[in-house]
Image (cartoon, rainbow, N blue to C red):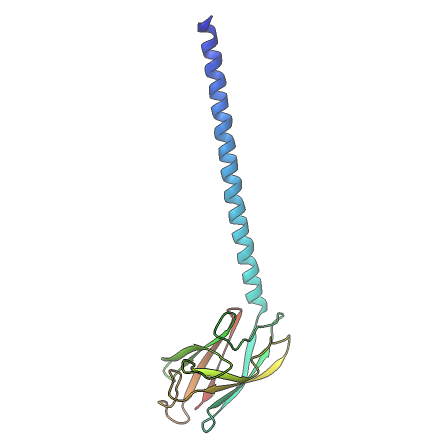
Length: 176
């Protein structure tokens, strides 16, 4: 009698192991598929947001006496752009380059000048940039800090690139 039950028990054990392996594989594949789908969806949302966010640097002037840089920017995208004058995220950061494209400095915009600030925003940095809104932003470049452009010759061309909280960038030039 035991000779006849052994193949049946062996077959049942093999079937149970096969079902268990299939179940574990199915659970693993569903988990991987969910992770991939979630990552893809997040990537698509970020890409779409970047595609619909666009700020154009219209023009700018720099007053050497007051050290105030005035920039006109225009939101040409289809989403509001955060412009924050703070060091914590979300914030606006900029990079200044000299005429040979060497970096002069990189810093955040701040609302008041402190000993660690490189530049501070005196107007235009306190709210979101609305759709199709043209805004004048005034930045004061602090004297003797890392963002000091005094080393550049008068009437030299300075390049600037602004990152608005990682949503979009704008770039332009001004003359010292």
